[in-house]
Amino acid sequence: MEGKEEDVKLGANKYSERQPIGTSAQTDKDYKEPPPAPLFEPGELSSWSFYRAGIAEFIATFLFLYISVLTVMGVVKSPTKCGTVGIQGIAWAFGGMIFALVYCTAGISGGHINPAVTFGLLLARKLSLTRAVFYMVMQCLGAICGAGVVKGFMGKHEYTTLGGGANTVAHGYTKGSGLGAEIVGTFVLVYTVFSATDAKRSARDSHVPILAPLPIGFAVFLVHLATIPITGTGINPARSLGAAIIYNKDHAWDDHWIFWVGPFIGAALAAIYHVIVIRAIPFKSRS
Image (tube, rainbow, N blue to C red; front, top):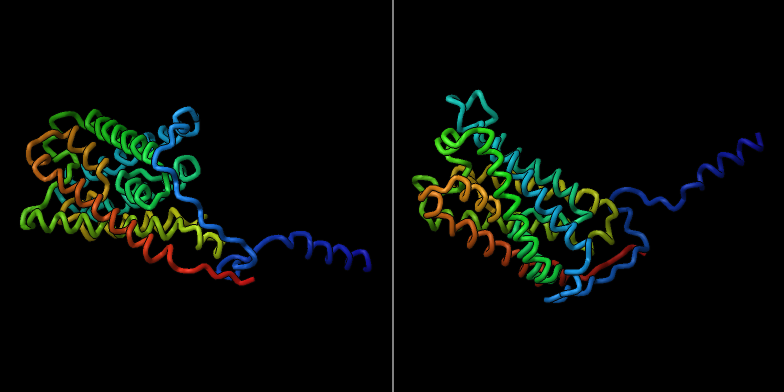
């Protein structure tokens, strides 16, 4: 019995370094504000991790466009919306893919998959201008290729007839309404990105980094539910550009500026809010 009691004691203390899940994990973690990223970092150009991150952004945006635009095409193609996944299904396709792809690429590139997210993080000095420009280029190329594969599967005639998944302002809404919807929608997304990846929260709550892709994907899902009837929901200039280039019809280009200006304004507002409000909140640990 004495031996067994000793085993029990050893078993109870064997993993004493484990932290409990939840807010009770606020123990003696130290928090240090990460230094601002340099505006220009030429040394990155000679690093393989830099190019690996760009490749990850390309592949992620390619897969994002492939799944999301193909879902949109399936809904538009059906003669009855009751026989398809509908608007809710489209929203789940966009949000679900962002959740999966952020989870897959966060450790490689940060899982941006969106020039607006990259732009917001650049303004908050989370990455260099060198990396930001490279990411945006790779995201746009990935989006064009993803939409191109969808067109190749469906055929030129059917793809064009069904609208190509291009973003336009819906009838009954003004361009101002569309711009406003894109600004607010992108603010929700980028604000969620900042909150889900905030270093202070990571120091307080050990579960936050693990769950970060979930609120980001869910934000995309909710914004799509709200704004699909208005603009088809852009909130991602690469997604809008890829579909517009492959679709290549005048009415898609007429409103295309909205899907760059709106997301960039929304991302800038989220970055300003993060710097002024979120980063200004003092860190308190339970030590």
